[in-house]
Length: 166
Image (cartoon, rainbow, N blue to C red; front, side, top):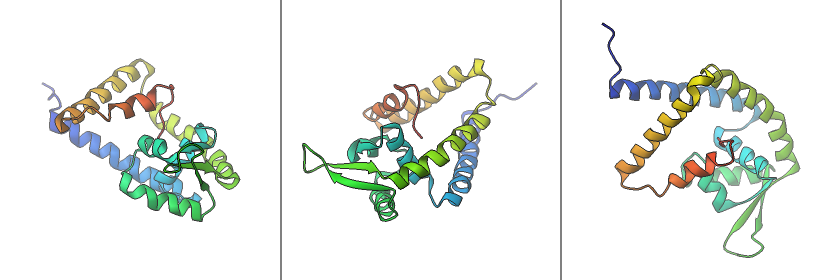
């Protein structure tokens, strides 16, 4: 009789996949002089017509907020993005993709999309919605355990457009 996976088995399996994803990401972006977080910023700006409020971008990023200012400072230093004062609120900052940043994003993005398709495309189409729904259940369970559903907006923000942002 085949043993069914226990909850801890699911956790370990997910951590194994996460580890591979992180290693692949680091290896993929390193030749371009970027980290995964930096590409995520380029990607978000690219999909938002090259301009976003910094607060909105930070909410959508899938990395810790504490490291974002360091990442953004490096990207400004490298000429990939620039900061401007918000036209209506001086306390806010607008991030703008520079021509150099846009060119790099356009160079990487098609290759990145093809790589994502190659890996995640191995999951049969007939099972993708179920997998996605199961991930949402886990997402909500973590938030519930924390006693908070406030960041559930991030799930909606990423998937309401039909294209989740990495």
